Length: 107
Length: 122
Image 1 (cartoon, rainbow over the protein chains, first blue to last red):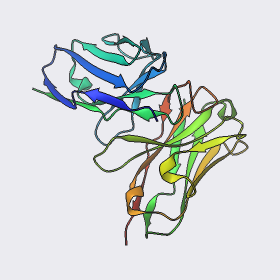
Image 2 (image 1 turned 180 degrees about the vertical axis):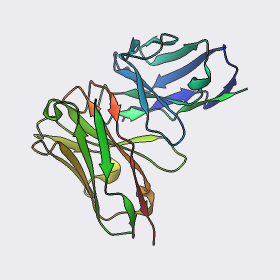
Image 3 (image 1 turned 45 degrees about the vertical axis):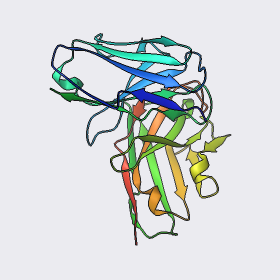
């Protein structure tokens, strides 16, 4: 199975900050890298697919980048509604696997 | 609008069986692959199973192989997860999710249900 390692596991930030979350994979996954946001008690919400393509309706302050085995989710100008846990996911090979999550908390 | 509604969760004793369902609406169900993803209390997301858009193929995670079976009935726009020989470590919220790709790879999970809680406890 492809292992997904997210860092940091948690971070504290203020409204307006630029936040970067990293996801490293145990082997190359091409462009099959997705990102999800989850708020407490809620189902995950799909944000980004194919490394950098925003799902319809997702705010443009969210951005994805990377290649090979290292990928990044960036939130430019953190908003109050962005405080949540973020997960990366690979669908390059089965089983699809998720990172352990990064919790973004309010400073 | 797209809706996925899970049902069938509850409290069950170790070793027993349970079936959870995912009812879909608002889209052409038979065009999409479907997945089950679970989340143990306070933990991350774990993929559990996938079924191809036409039901011709399915896959389950190694952690549930031989115990869980995924299926779908496209005439009822519903996916199922049959769980047998349940263990305490199967306790989790079980989500269903839609995948525009028909298989378990190459896609993404663009819509999720609200989840159904399965608690395995004596």
